Length: 370
Image (cartoon, rainbow, N blue to C red):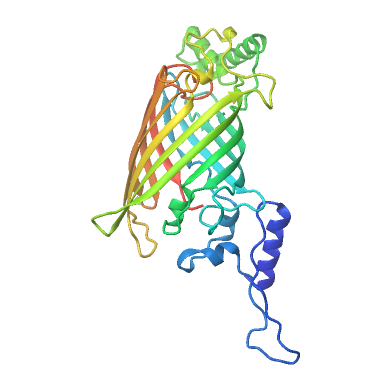
């Protein structure tokens, strides 16, 4: 990229309001007529100037990073058809805010603002008529993050050490809010199921059960919440110098409230499902420990050996310990992508049936590199 292109790209980012402008070192003026082998000084971004070992981050990584893990895979929830599961999660720095690996020494109380969004969906390939894609989770938020950095830590660790205050909305993006609308939608779906090859070999009772299950996916769920997130990662000493180990602890505290909507859209009595309860009885407190061991590489390779294991516990902020959810992950890298097998028991399979105790399992492929 030419110097003009670098300056133009920086101006574009500044005008977009996503990041603060790059640091441009001062250019010493030469006396008139004096010649210099280099009459211009190339702009140097704050990230480039502070990058360890002369590492230069890509332009995209200066603007957008992952907020939660971006992944795709296979999920089977108890009582539901298996589906192709995908989650995309991105975050952007607000003006005058930076990522943990971009900052130097600064006051501990100095917050950095971010906007982020996480989207989860599932496609029921051959499991439902027309193989629909169903929205599972939409989670836009703004946050103030305090980085708990250390100069001796690696860039990855610096980005995984923070305390964060969050203001967010979380929903499944659906539309049914009352029993009349639900009954009409269920009747239309049942009639569609009775037509075509999908109904072959199924009794009318089975078709009614399918219509009710699929119509429940259209019930609107939504919450506003304020939260506090904490994450701390540490590189562990390894006896084998060819490997690196990392331990990460994460916790989340969420208080569900009415702010951007007129009510909490959660289980209502007209749904007539046993065990219905508010979400704060089963969610709002979350803790996770992750251990990762991966091979050190001097250069990029398609063969990158690593193993990873984690355990998480979730319970209700309104009824701690009364309703508990456990999730376990175990896996490693296949070529360059982390692949994990996972199992969950408890609640929160999705926003529709968050209050039902069940089990889930599946496989997830983690998308890294941004």
